Length: 313
Image (cartoon, rainbow, N blue to C red; front, side, top):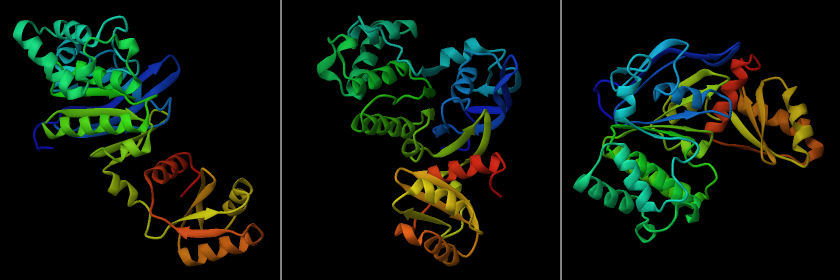
């Protein structure tokens, strides 16, 4: 990342659909070369925001620029200069890998030696050298995913927008995809990625937490986690976690309780030792095991949502 002019600037950016507010006055900057994560559940406003930034959807209010171009007045200029990978891969299933790349290269204005060179780059970068003559519909999900990404990068855009790019692929495919994102960032490409995966968000330089169209928080992952005091989160293992959750919520000094699989994460306001003792006493018939744990990004997200909805201090 550099101190150059931001790649993306949004100020009070909003979008409504009738009476429904999909994006509610969000503001942020994205630095050149940054991996910027937009984290939130389905319906949080992530895709609507990314479509406005790509010039595909006009804002209802506020303003935004991408590479210095206004999303409202200069959408055509933005589209020529960005890469975009939607939730549905923009590939033709009845064409081969190489045919798809040559098609998209032509759409981006690449011809002759340039498109040939970029096609070879794309195949090598995606690690699909042995699949160039394979129909896209016959490729495994991870291969299609990497192909869609390199297709969006054929014209060497300075910024690429990735909207939920790893849905439906296995963990190994996701890891390889994110290794490619790291490489892109290292060479100066700005990556704006939406996700609802906490482990993917951990790999971003900064993360914006979105909920119900609003921006709850924006910072680096370590800074976001610092919202909790040391020792403020404990993990509780017991026989009946759902019933225990209701009991723990009533204890003084407990700010929030959330179910993590078959365990509970409890946010304590003060005096963690006293809070742990109170939990053990309350659940004495449940044979509880209470352990202090470092905060996860999921803890932060749940806490921010609770605070936004007035359930936490």
